[in-house]
Image (cartoon, rainbow, N blue to C red; front, side, top):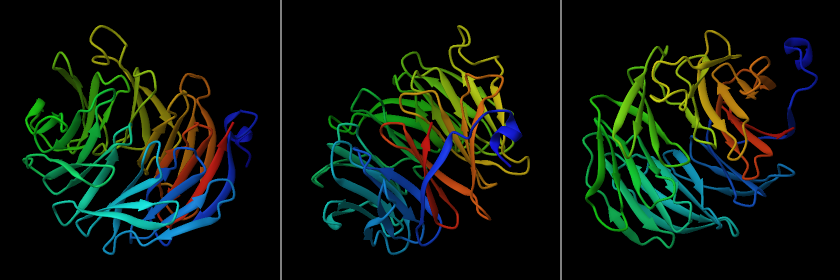
Length: 352
């Protein structure tokens, strides 16, 4: 049935450009800085690099023998970083398809890898450890062990500061200068994932206890949102740093962080309902410079939202058959959206 018949709009703004496949569950996606390539990692290990126009395979990288957990493309460069369940951080030359560097993550299960926006530094998380290297593979800093497993690492926008999320705290360091924390945001709980507002002023993390915690970094003011059905791993800020989209169930909740002098505290979120009631959100992604929001769900749906259109916010829909939609990634120019599924299907959509 056409989208217009279901939702009263003239067209589906998710137009499929191509579909391909990786060997199994697509766990991570990464676009090249110029948008001409898309890398997709399968949970069993292999990493496939596709031509973003044709969908043809360009390189097949072995990834990590015990399973790949995350990939990240170097900003302004050609290196692809990957981590996996073999204690390795690998830097791949995407021009030749060859391994450029292999680094020791410090624990058997390396789960996170993230480039600094300059493309000069890359950080990883494995067990209770976080490390920072130069793009040439030289170790810059091994940060002090955390109180629990590092669940996430993110660079604070506009700085060289790295925030490490683990049990009981989100700790921010300046790894180019020191191993001493710049700031410790202590919280008694088990955080799962975090997202910095693009202006670097607000840190949000989703938690095991089905809450979302906000930190105003300079003032140290914090607040908490609750009422979610499940634990919250899905967080996405819009480019203006005003709106935070969260998962934690089948409904996308969008908090207005400028709703009043107290931010979102005491306000009600906008609630976007389109995923099946018995499902749950698996990924969220805002455009880098636009207002469109994509959501993926365990029901296999990839939905495109225009939240400012309060009357008809849903503007696009696609569904993977017989599999959850597992991961989302916008192209650098915000014009294409890539999505992966639990069966290894990868789809690229033109948005418009």
